[in-house]
Structure formats: structure tokens, C-alpha cells
Image (cartoon, rainbow over all chains, first blue to last red; front, top):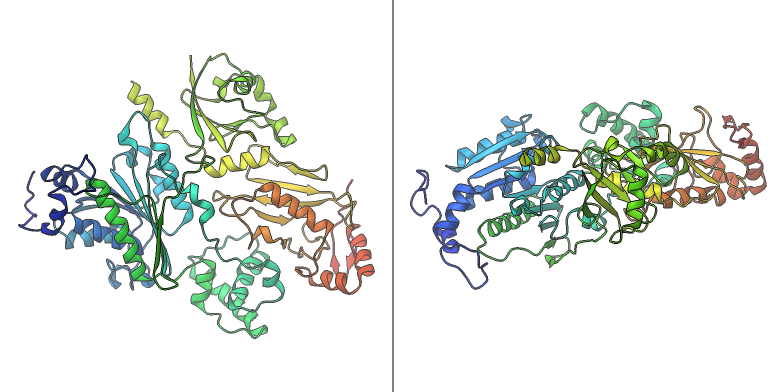
Length: 424
Length: 176
């Protein structure tokens, strides 16, 4: 093993206890000793998404367990309200990008660790970027970003290349509650599979907001849902703009006064419109620690890893539950089948549809077809059928490039079928 | 060569889960003849309108238009639905306010990803068959409906012809 100059004696004494010898539950592939240490410290490349409440904890944990090549993505800048728990940031950093400041802090504090920040969106990066990592840990606060990340890693999997399967560890917290899960894209249930498990964001009946407000939240929703579009017209509300929050706060406070409701404040207004759930530093610490232990176990094969969903419920004492969340056959991301379909370059769309209807192993009733950018043929509603009908006579090759993806939906399919078209 | 092709294939856009779900919802709509969708741009499946022409109940004879706007976080987020008659004049309905906001539970507090566009459309039609005075958005209309049903029915009829009720100008919604 190449001894780095920053690895003073016994730096990893405790962790080496786990890595030096195999245990009864270790994977047969576990290379006890120098092999695994070399992989962890000199080869493994890990990506952290989010440098906020969870991200700060995750970065610190990873660096201290011996990961040395860490990348981090975050699109946010540091706000003063982050400082109570996002301990890599100081008052002087307010306004700076989280990813950059977090990376610098870790590198200064933990010698020999390289943290590469990216200040921007996960959507800016392409497949080649994500392919360079051994695994990905998410510490995000948005459903949308999680869905994107999970779908991207599922689509990255190439059955002929085992290296293309990137384990995804997803952490999340909400007040005293949290979850950590391990997703092996295409093998175990993905984020989309569990979309219906999510707590829905608190929403109040619109008639209550309009007529019988009882809570300060009702007044704030009245200001944001009903008054904003009525008064401001098409102007888009920006929940990060203090002027916009100020307007909503003034309107909500007047409403609250009218109905003799107490408790409308600036911070509650911001909390309701941005759907902020109070973040608790210690919940973040528990979840981040759990994510990092799984990352360590997966990277080293030194112990059995989480299969596959750990839930922490701290709202009623401490209760935790670990179970295997099942993959859904009708999952729109990982459930739909993908089929390689070599066709003649002379084949028309109509003939392709006939082929799908008659093909023994598919037999799809009334298929509707589209590419990622346009509709090829939709069976309904009548207006769209009519609009796409001229495509029936066209050759498929005019609409779909070599290797292009066609999404097929039909009531006879659990969700959808993805075709990869190639031409003979 | 093969490698280059693979790299090219990987850069191609992917169909998103929301896109597939909308395609599935739309192509499998099972609407009665009283409901019709209209796509201003047939290539854009995320923005369209729905016209409801009830064939029974007190709103029979009217044509009511709703706009649907679906975002990329569908079906986690519900579609945004508004009643869109001509600007400045709205419809007279206890559950629809003068800005076109609609009080339908599955559009907000009771939305779930297992619901689909069909459920929303059927829910909207139901509002015209059974307006609900207990969840008012147009308070005047709701009070009239529960206190003086005959007057309410008369108001519905006259509002649908585009008349003015208590200083509010309503849209002429009579189906042509």
C-alpha cells in the first residue's frame, strides 16, 4: 500500500480493527488488510449531494473514516439561519457557496483528504460525470432532486458493465424523524418505487383558507395562494426574495388581525411558503452517521450493509424500524422493461405499432409512443390522436435516431415499456 | 467506434417519470361525452384545458372551461387547475371563486400520487352535479344555496346567461 505522508502512525488504528481481519458476516469478496485499505484510501471516489444539514455531517464522517477523494455538489449559498447546525460554516461565510466553503473546511481540518466542490445543480452534470464515482450519498431536502438523482443512476446501469451500477445511499430528516436507505439501482427498490410512502406536505382545504381561517398558517396560505395571484397577476412568487416574503407577511398579518388570530410572524410566513420543517442537528447527525456507515461497509465489504430501508421515529420516544422496501414492477423509473428492438430502416410507425401488438412476448393493446422530446403516436384523446396521426405513415427512422429511446404506454402494461431502436 | 456510439447514446435526453405518467394518464382517459380536453399546443402535454358540459343537474346547458398545468414533479405534486372563463367574468358556483380557484379536496389536501388526471376530471364534473354549500369559495352563492334554494337555482340560470348578480358580472357559459 502506498503510504501517504499525511498518514501518521495509528491514524486509522480504530478503523483498521475492522479492516484487518474478516469476521463471520463479512462478504467472501472482502480483502482483509492492505487491499481494502488501499481501495478505501487511494481509489474510492465518492459523491456527496447536498452540503447542508446532512451534507456537513456526511462530509465530516466520510473524511474521518478514511475516504480521501470526495466530491460534493450543492446549489445553495450559506444563510445565517444555517449556522446553528451546519457546522462547517461560520458567520463570515454567509452568502458564499455551501459546496466550496464545506470543501475548504474539510481539507483544512482533515489532512490528506481531497474534496472537490461543485456549486450548481445536479442536473448540470452528465452521465459521464456520475460514472466516475464508486458510490453516491444524498443528503437532500427536496423530493424533486431525489427523484432526479435516483432516475439518473437507474438509467446509468448498463447490464454488460457491472461498474455502471452505482449504489445510492439516501438520507433524509424531518424534525425528529429520519430515514436512511440503500438503493442498488435496477436491483433494489428505487426512490420512485417509494414515492407514495411520502408524507404529503401539509395543505389546507382552500375553502377553509378562504372563509374560516383559524390558524396563522391559514392566513399565510391565503396571502400566498389566493391574494398573490389576485393582486400580483402573473408575477412569479420567489420564496427566496425577502421583499416577496415581506409582502406576504404584511397581507397575512392584516388577515390575522381581522380574524383575531395570533402567531403570524415573518419566520412562520417563510416557513409555510417554503414548506420548511424545523431541522434538528442531532437528527441530522444520527441519519448522516448511519448513511456513512453504510457507505463504509459497501466500499469495503467489511460487514453486511443495510437491506434496505431504515426509519427513525423520534417523535414518540425513540423507535426505529428496518425493512426491505420492495421494488415495484410498475415503477415508472426502474420497473418498466427495456427492450432492444432492431428494426428495418424502412419500417413505418404504423408497422411498428402492428409489430408491438402482434409480437409474442409483448402483445400490447393500443400502444401510445413517444420519444423524450416529442410524441410519435397517441391513441387518445381524439385531438392528440388526430395531431399525431400523420406520423403513422412516416418511417420510424425519420423520428427516432439510431439508439434512440421510445416510450410505450398502454393500459395493458403495468406502467411503460422502453424501446431502444436500432436499424438493420 | 462502439465506445463513441455508447457515449453519444448516454447524452441523449431521457423520458422523465412525470412525462411518461402524463402520457399514460392522457391516453387512458375514460371521459364521458360531457367532458372534452383541448390542447392549444398538441406537442405540449403539460398544459391543456378541459371543457365540462353537464347533461343533467342545475348547470345543464352550460360549458365550463378549466385550465390544467402539470409540473415536472407530477404525480408527487397535483396538477394546477383553474376555472378560466373570459377575464373579468366568472362562473356562479359555491365552490369556485371569482378568481377561478376551485375547491376540490383532491386538488390540494387529499391529493395522492395514485390518483390521476381522470380522477381529477371526474371530481370536477361532480362539482356541477352536486355543488357543496359546506365548502364555499363563493360565499354569496353558498349562502343562497343553503338558505334559499329556489333563488339559488334562478341565480345559476341567469348567471349562465351572462347576467349580473349582486354587482358581479358572470360569464355567458351557454354551450353553443
